[in-house]
Length: 120
Image 1 (cartoon, rainbow, N blue to C red):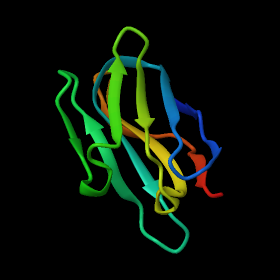
Image 2: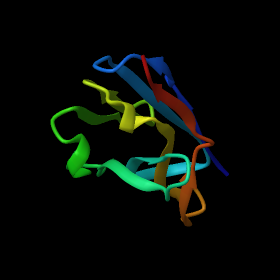
Image 3: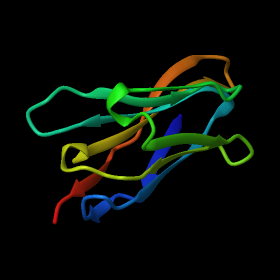
C-alpha cells in the first residue's frame, strides 16, 4: 500500500558528508512521524533521527550536531544530511514512516535500506 524508497548512500571518507533521501508513495492520506534508523553488522537496528509532521526533531546522542533530519511534506520525502562522518556511522540506513492510508488505516512502513560506508 505504501512504498518507501531510499537513495543517497555510498562510500565516503571520514569527515565527509552524504545526504540520504526517502520518498514515500502509494495509498497515503497523511504521513505522521518519519525517521531514519540504521543497523551495523552484528548490531541491532537503532533510531538515528526522527521528525514529526510538525517538524519537531530528535536525534541519537552520537549524531547530534553532525546529522540533520528534514522533510518536504509536499513531496512526501524525508532527508538525512550527514556531516563529519565517522567509521562508526557505517551501517545500512533504513527509512521509516508512520502513515495513515486513504482507507484510514495506520501503518508502519519501512524502506529496503541504503548502505553507508565510511572508510579511508
